[in-house]
Structure formats: structure tokens, C-alpha cells
Amino acid sequence: MVHAYILVQTEVGQAAAVAKEIAGIAGVLAAEDVTGPYDVVVRAQADDIDQLGRLVVAKVQAVPGITRTLTCPVVNLS
Image (cartoon, rainbow, N blue to C red):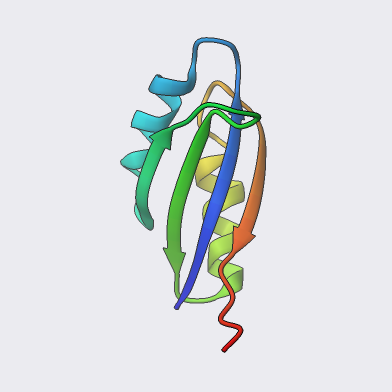
């Protein structure tokens, strides 16, 4: 199982709507509005890195109002 944080930038005023829509996507564990350089932080999981890529490209990035994403897979260093 692969987990990742997806950092999302949105069009001005769209963060709440984007977070709400992303939260309904299968594989998304949480989607929250935040302040700072990103507008929404998403916690997602997938069976493998390829499925994670498909989740981000085909589903998350397809949500209207998103201008940019940055996917940060979680690694176990211990």
C-alpha cells in the first residue's frame, strides 16, 4: 500500500469547493483546506505507485478549479 500527500493549488476562492469534491474520490482519505502556498492538502492511498499516479492524474487533477498539484509519496526510512 502506498500513501501520499497531494498538495493542491486552486483558483482564487475555489479551495473549499475543490476540497469537498476531492474528498469524494475513491482512494482519498482526507482533503482539507489550508493556508500557505497550497490551498488544499490531500491524504491518499493506493495499492501501488502506478495506481497512485492514475488517481492523481485521472481523478484529482480533473477536478475543476485546480491549477497545480505536487504529489509527495510517504516513505518509511526505518
